[in-house]
Length: 427
Ligand code: IMP
Figure 1 (cartoon, protein in one colour):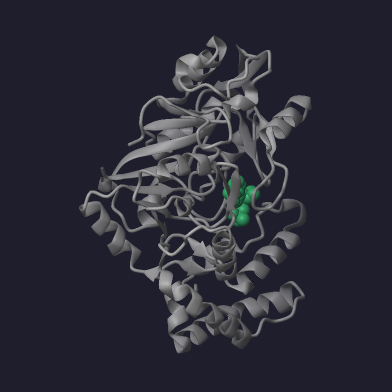
Figure 2 (cartoon, helix red, strand yellow):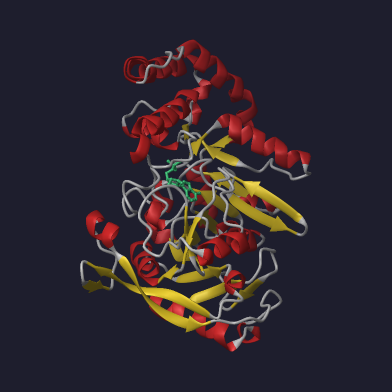
């Protein structure tokens, strides 16, 4: 069995943690390939709830090797805190592997993220403030610090000095902040080196060898398709590629090895941070989705913006990721609505538009065109098979499937590990 990718088909927070964790028991490696501790997975195992930010959710499945790939940006202090938090709860984290090529989120990257957002004022992106964008910017500008640099003090010193040369000018002259001392940063980073050393590995080699031995490798995307730096609602996006291609560049595994790309799709839509969102609700329905769906960010604690399902976005996700199927999550949240509107197209300046417009201006003007589907009131959390669902819930799922362009292979009907209907096995 070759490699599979699981990624968010909307703006993130689709419930990927549940999906990855569901597969975690049967896969040998779970790999994060982009993003950093801006992500947030909630995984419920039995009566235990785990909030993971940086670690792949496979960390909770014994027998599975969790991998932080080269495409991820790592804040060592967050990583070590997350590891010790899990250790205190009896979770064995010793199998974790971290790519030596992954970039490090330095304290100055976090500072730059925060001051830039403050400086942008009303035009801010609404980032998570975790230093993600500035760290990727350093990577692309070739002044980034990589995990492997922690093991060569003189290289580390040179690189930190080079990175701070320009940043300190900016911080002091533009943002009116104090300069950051390179020596202090180096000292802090070197302090993490020993603790991280047991995990650092040539993950490209490990993963390719694993695939040669027919091991199952699962790539877990952070954020979601519409937050992709290339294919998302730029500039209101994150600074990496959560879309399927990112799984290859962010891990060093070639596209020919990937046989399945599963899009996680919430039965309605949410978004955090700024940016366009055609089906956003500002009324009591939006408030109810937020309350019933527990739509509050795992990482930042911010309320998520909520709206009805948007099939235009789902079709777009199918296209840009080459999705083979969907995992539909949180269907239970919609229980109780008499009628459920679903966005099937947009109206843009008087025209009906079926596909996501590439133009930012058009997308900002997009108004949802709704079709209304009949709802259901029965509790669906105990449903074990598709036929256990009330007829209207079945029809809702079938309608979404038809509009979204790929089969729905699993349905989440509650937060717990076992509250899932499997229609087609993922493995
Ligand atoms: P950044 O990733 O912190 O730079 O934030 C950029 C945008 O992506 C902001 O709108 C964030 O709210 C959003 N974002 C980042 N990570 C996540 C996530 O895991 N779920 C949902 N939105 C996210």
